[in-house]
Length: 202
Image 1: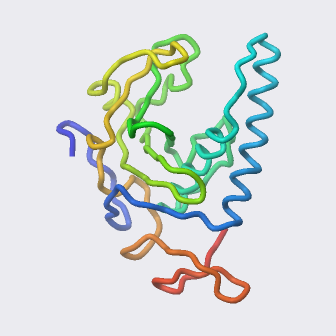
Image 2 (image 1 turned 90 degrees about the vertical axis):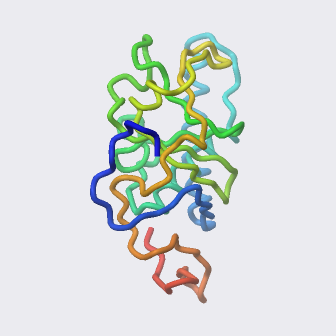
């Protein structure tokens, strides 16, 4: 655990990350629906601002897959890409298709999407649907304090923290009971956990 990183509040159980989560087909379909909706919004914005850099539909969709994987692993609500809310519960989820680094935008930069969020938990995910890897988490302020500051390929100043330096204990607010992450499989017409038999609840 990084020195100086705040201790998490009381949680239902300890979950050690990295941890792999595989989404069921219904989850993948919902992620793809949200991905297409957000892709269309991004593309319309690019045209309105006379910027013609094509949004990456695959990356956008997988980023939402990472969000839903965190929601399934923790029992926290996923907000379906609602830009007015945190990604999952009260937390932010960051997806990368490259090397596992947690990225937080410079909160002091103009129009930074992370302005005013430094007290929030940021969770790092990688992978591609249906399977995602949750690497761990850190508070935004800790990433700014200890991460490497550099400009992204888009020229945006950001701070990056190596996935190996993240916290790997339970994400604050975890509500999924038991000592494992559920492994979903279809039992007849219904989905249930192959480990404990718990029914799937959307």
